Length: 218
Image: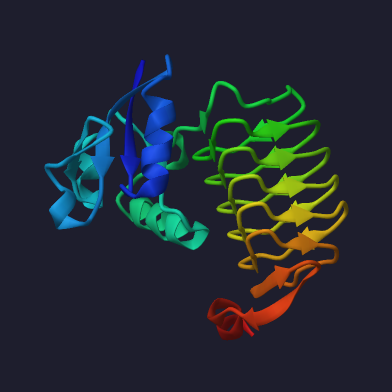
């Protein structure tokens, strides 16, 4: 088994650890987190070994970044890149009961939790998180750093943009695009394209605001 370290020790990290400790592929050695109070404690019977920058002391370990929001994961990955950590250092963790046909692909650093289903010709990018029970149907494309919360379901030919966040139980109609940096609220039903940077909620989903990230880019 290959040594694994989880970076960021919050709720997603605990969920990921629950999969990793049952795996025959990974030996979960512990966690790295910048919260001083966590260092020296244990999570899932594994130690918090130090801050994120101490990753350079663990050159033999594969890594998973488990911050819950996509832009937070992206910031950590950028920080690790400055420390010399390349794409080859990241693990890809797929729970054993995930349905993953050969026609589908999952990028480096991504995490697919229990009960998720990919049907056919699905492309999942790097550092994507799919929480329990996510359903990705034919020809879906999920860009890097996107977050799909529990029970999200996408119809066919949906594109989810980079660092988009889809809340628990959200449903997306076939052929719809979810823009980068956008948020689709919990339980929302998306029937038309969600523009980049906007937050939509409801049934059917409609806009409530634009994110500061996109305002700054305009």
